[in-house]
Length: 302
Image (cartoon, rainbow, N blue to C red):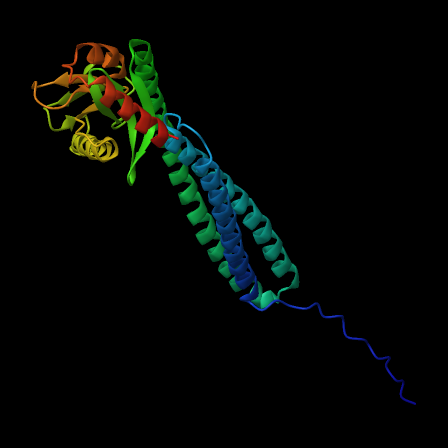
């Protein structure tokens, strides 16, 4: 008699992943993260706009401070999103290694790795740029605050000071109003001064039209200051029904100023602000015109 061999059950087969499935899951996850954080930023910006609309008088550097906050939040979004994607990446790759067919594990891992490299490359690049932008914004904000403090000291001499004044489609950094006239102050910090502290390396030359920093030339700030002073003059004239001369001034915190010609608008270090407004040639305003200007600026600043 022939013995009958017992039937041997086939081993249980684990479900396998198609080669492209892990990479597809990672791509979908990355897209969902992008959509999620964009929606968060959209709602956050909407809330910020509503809050700013309800605020009163504007603080110096307020727009820059809001931009710093937004940049800081975006850095947090990218960081948390990167950690979320990292967790997804580890989980998907581990599942593919356990459940995938032996022959498909290597190409699947290569595809998943490519997706991960692209995602993290974009995230790291963006984080580096955002961090640099935040540092630059903080430097500009600190410069704006330094100028504001120097200007606020003039209030004891009868001047009225306004910061971040909205004027049409732009904001004027600082406006000074007093018996000597109306002034629009533009602030620029220029390129970051070298850290050696040498006088020559922290000096900007000014020829009446252009600012010559040690490593670059700024031909925009003077023109922008003059244009905004003219626009403020026209805006005030429409508001008070009488011509108002507005003079432009540029403040450069962090820099010594070396004039090469007496021509051009004043360009000063914040430490020179008090002296400038004590000695600048006055363009007197009548008491009635001064009151109307101040009344209009008080309303506009709120």
